[in-house]
Image (cartoon, rainbow, N blue to C red; front, side):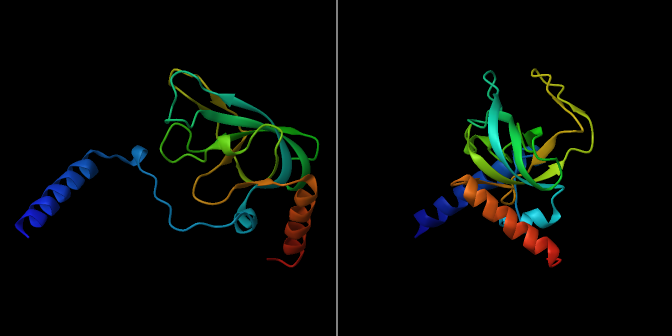
Length: 171
């Protein structure tokens, strides 16, 4: 019994030391999770597109495998935001932190449904990469379903129909 108490005491101290050393940039806390259909209701842009390319950072890798900083998406259908036919740049809002949206889950060529936030301020990465996020770019966050790979373009059409129907009902 005394051995269990000693183990718990050591574990509590280790946890306290770990928390004391953490800062806001290292932590990612989400209060709940919403599906793409719910996230889309508040998004600046809601669309179906095709992933054209990824911009991958090779050295240094910013977050243990989360090396896709942004992806280019060709807009196939637009519910709100950029027009059909445009190619947009979608950034991982949490890029370079443990709070990453992981754009690598959207492979090149995939048909995707997206609910995005427009980047409202010019941002320049002061780090070694020198990346620039333009005000014409879009952001995808980590704490909800902001994107979904569609099984086919037909599934993408169904998503558009569902979102359009919901918008007309005011939902």
